[in-house]
Length: 348
Image 1 (tube, rainbow, N blue to C red):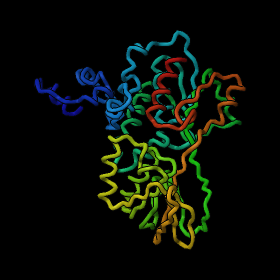
Image 2 (image 1 turned 135 degrees about the horizontal axis):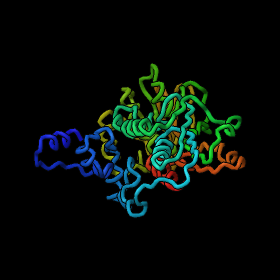
Image 3 (image 1 turned 90 degrees about the horizontal axis):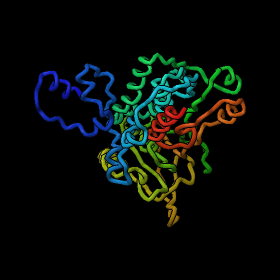
């Protein structure tokens, strides 16, 4: 965007290759001409567009839910019946729902239990490999500031205060809760943490770690990149056929380059069966052959997550029109959360 801005300001006729950038924001050039640089929705290099082009299609964009839906959605129109809309949760899906609803003239407020916006997505953006992802959150923060949408941080909505919101519509964007139960024999000799806690709190004095990936997805790969950036000697144990099996090849190739160049050791088709006396034992899920890892300082365990949707039924019983989006409906990726937020906000 900076290169294009310079070329336009200098009146040059040079070509600028910005395919992904214009999928993220088709109005990029016009915004540059108008001097609205900060309004440009920046491409963050998520490569959802490339993944879709190489796979099932149609083209999609993590950051721009209107991509390849332009004819289906049509232009954004102001609502003839403005409503009081409360968004619970300030992850990317909640922020997008609030932005679009406000653009349509609704009176919108956001309530977030944490003291920051971005939810779990912000954790991923804090990993050195993925810092560009912060653009997804920051762009929405700027847009919501311009739209004068209040964001109430550190305010958890629960059964006792839900009815006091005085909302016509609630958009539930409360995310998901990691599953932290593991049915193995564990004597406590090696601490177990989660990917989220690792990214938030670091690895402490640990020098070596095992990532125990039972659920896959971007949380697991995020933990791999985070652990690698912390300089940990890394073993990855997963029952999948390969490490990051469910990650598209566009992302998996550079991930493998980072991990294997950093000395990580892969143990696919395997599951941990016990942790005793400082030794981690895992077993091949097909041959049942066992192997042991000693000198492990930390286990980073990922077993998936469950939708945090406890407020949904309560809001319905109170007679409030309520929609669940993103992980609060079903744990998936930010691409779906952002798209659902935008689509619901167009619907209300």
